[in-house]
Image (cartoon, rainbow, N blue to C red):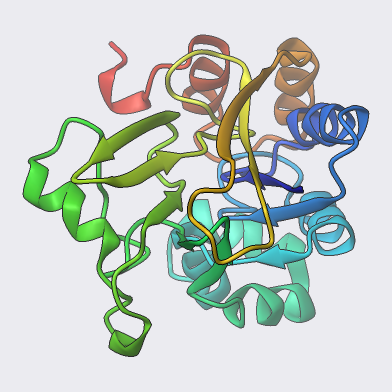
Length: 243
């Protein structure tokens, strides 16, 4: 049986990433796919990018990866870009948009935010039509067809929904979860088979990590929007909802 860890939205939080990586290895899972947003918000983008490149079999591009790579005139992006350097920025800019593969007779597609764009945000409470559009092929690759299973990140809310016989799941966030303050990832299990009657499973994993250590690292680095970042990782509440 194939077992694949699906991680997303590490956001420069090396403390959380190390805890998740330790948990993945303790379960004997050898394959790791990353759904983007390696950088942004957190204090250690260089360490995260280098570690992800060394440990993940697949990495796709997130919206923060793209924004930091083009180095827009915004301190949140330029602070990250200045530390990453040209080679790492070129790596982030060159990451693929999506990945598709077969497992237990199912067509599984992974994207960061949606098949439309890395900036097209889809929440679990959005209209059914918007959520069903997640199974559409990427806008520039219509030949991929409709997927049976779609996994994504971006919104930092871990969830799973069945709709019209299809499965949509969000792996949550490793470094910046916005549901509860524990790192989140998923494990896919299935057979290397075209038979959709073979076993298939999506397991959600939550990993506690030393949040106060990460707070200290962020304070020492003096990351932009420091207070927002600290409150988010402590509370799991999005900055736009904080008082």
